[in-house]
Image (cartoon, rainbow, N blue to C red; front, side):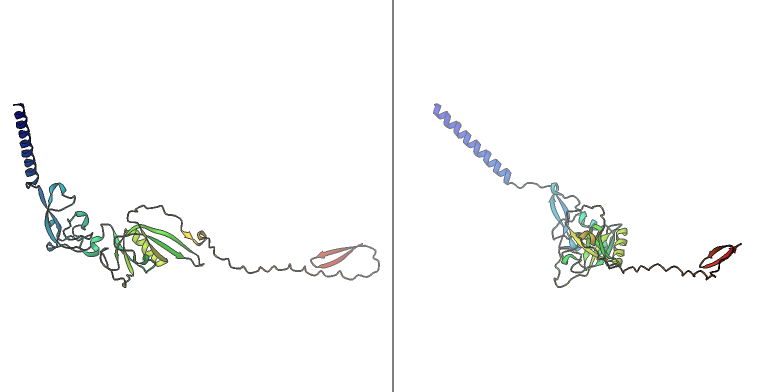
Length: 282
């Protein structure tokens, strides 16, 4: 009798475990209702400066809990705005990747309010051998050569954004290695634009590439001159100074000859310049 009860209890436990496992399996594999929301995404690759049209957009579904900050749910809020950061197909369109409303398209769309775009001439050296690309950050060095042959260099701008290199706005676009742009367009303020233009007129400028994560602005230092490099300007030999001999004193006329005869009075000699007269006092 006791054995019979044990078998019944074991059978009930086994059946309960089976039913519980089946319920867990059905619950985990059953389709669950998702809380989704439609967001605006790029229908194709969108380059920098492109003005977005309706054909460039599509709607995709995302879980509401995964809704990214700055996303759009209406395509009308995106149409006619320019792309500020390149986007790939099916990428969610965010407000931080678009230019402001009414900012136009192309380069003008990338200029923030209050900013100015200034183009400077570069070559393979001043353009850091072509490693400067749109979106990179640079410092601007100014070198002036003085009339005496000496020179000095100073940093006049720091952490300046490159908007375009040549006519290229997209940093991810393929560039022909044989084509070497001669112009770099920088995003500056009005005051910085004036300093940059003046520097080009008075000397030479050099772009210095900096790390994208380095946004530190250092205090202006004194210009670096040749003497700071241990190279002093050679001194020109000075012409010998001729020392003139002092002029000889004017000749003194000899006293006039007098008779050797004795006079009864005293003779007084009076000198006036180089002349001498004698007077006899009786």
